[in-house]
Image (cartoon, rainbow, N blue to C red; front, side, top):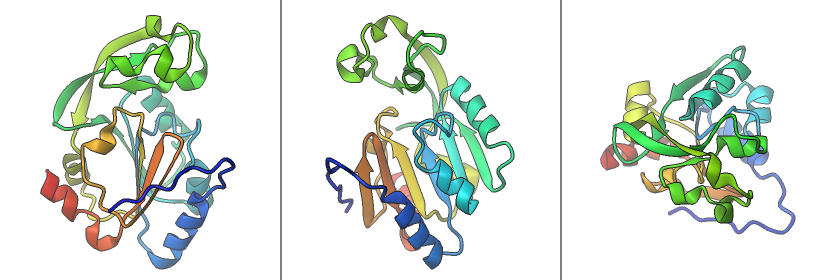
Length: 202
């Protein structure tokens, strides 16, 4: 069962300690980050990837964000990239996003959802954001399909941007340790549980 830790008023960075602990325990550390955006802005894994040379897979559905992501990690060994959304079905899906050329803060340009209602001023907190929302089609994979296609047999850390289409609801969380901070959910995956629940849910 996943247990969520309530964000304190002054949260400290838990992830560096969790990653360091797992690196000591597991020689074959591997991360999967869903909703990686450009891999830099508000990405809690970036410094750890650079510091430790962490291998893993970045998953991003927006084309412009995906191109920036690849460019930002072009010289980083051990990382791979997948341009798709993660959802309930394989194929293609319509998503709603804030236009890439919208005159809005940079972080807003990475916001997207399967549900257009999620991209409202009330939800995002940006006045007038609705006028810049557009629909686009993107490739879509379930998490089991993504792991199978990539040949991923085990992973240590699974991180999902929870605003990224609510895809955390499209699969089981195979973890005994997880925490949520801001819009991100991070899950430490034991080797035995790494793939089996995903295979069952696929």
